[in-house]
Length: 232
Image 1: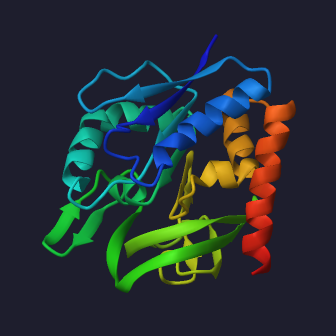
Image 2: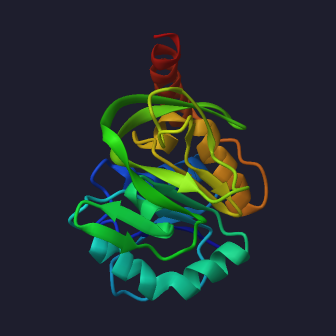
């Protein structure tokens, strides 16, 4: 059976290449000998019954209302997948749309309430390299955002910020149930194969080990990028 990696609304959520995290997952699964494919779900289309994994990238503020509207129509199906253990990676404004109120200059916009937290404006927009210390190791990428995600009490952040700003209070992102969410762009899974393989293991129910010349080249490129960011 083909493992479906579902890219949610990529026509809205690929401004930083973040929707391509779905391609990273499917490609690494194939390098590990699995049958996997990306399904791109546009707003208004009928979703598959049960994907192996879900990716929600980042969008622009003007497109955020359209993204939240599309997610609202999918909310019941999405929460069912999450309750069933389907891993979901959300990045940037994708993470914000899954939470509570999003603080925009025009006023708050209500997210779909899947993640326990809300997005509040930072003192100033931030852009630059971001390094986050997590249970999966140090994750690297870049950030470009004007808000921080404030978690409800007791909710676990993805990790501690060791370089950059993240969500503005020393941490970045969320780990909540089957959801992993972050400010890391890059795409984050291309720069951090260990996180990609961790999500694949959750999606497939078993560890995966990508191998072959293409996997080795991709891992070597990611290692060079990581080394440069971690030593600078």
